[in-house]
Image 1 (cartoon, rainbow, N blue to C red):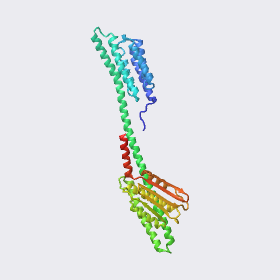
Image 2: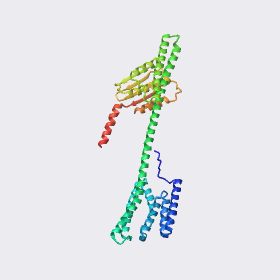
Image 3: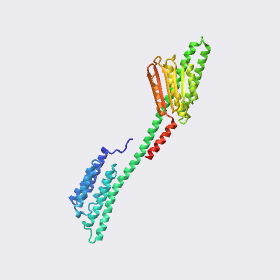
Image 4: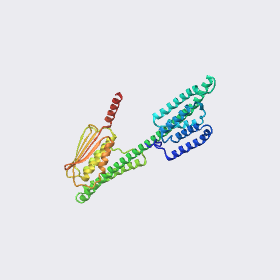
Length: 397
């Protein structure tokens, strides 16, 4: 997924902003402390350098911030004179709190807590804030509270920005995943409709062409045979028109009811192919399951296989069809190869895709003088049972 806030090298605009803000801090705050003590001016410049490199180099920022703190702790006489300059620590801890890596954020929180604890002890023991212990403790607690607000508040501000960015990124990822899923679903629908269109058009026109040729040859010699061929052409055309109307309805409305050929249409398909002059040796094993998915898949695969046999096979030899329903659906179609045609291979690719969508596989290849189509589709009900069983076993383990 695209990351809109990638943790990498800072951009040119960010570097210009950091350098400008650091220069402004050094100029405005430095002018004030230059009139008091040049050593305090040095602390201001160190903090300004830390601000300048806070996005360019995290170790350098930590080192410069630590150096500025050590110099202040080494001079108890300064007391809280640099409290204005120390506001820069809020920006430094903001960077630590907003860092995407957990160890860096933990380091920032620990550094803030450790620094405030050292400041409390330093103010109570080394800094002269009054004659009584009560005034010392009060001053130490007050200064430490302000320091905790600066350092802890800066760290918390950075952490909150990190969480907000992550929340936005998660929402963008969710939208992107939904877009990809819709695009994938749309592509699947296009592939399915393309496969259906190819199966319908290729099958119908192959039958129409074969029957038209037969009618032309037998028109004078056998008018009854020619009439029968014309009836097959008409019936094929009506069936094709109905299928095309269903596909067009699906294109207009995704919720339209899909056309699902049943098992009874297998008989019509066989009869239509036999009327073209094809000899079919049909063998069926087992009982067909009550599954619309298998019914549709079986019809489309059988239709395409017989259409290819009609177009490219030797019709003087019988086409052997075996359908096995004992475990899902297994189809084998064997025909003798005739004159090689000018097919594009889209039909075989469509059959493979259709079988894969149903969870099965299909092979279409030449074996000697035969062309063999082998397909196996698992039973959806048994697949669901096995999936639930596997899920239960994985949950138990």
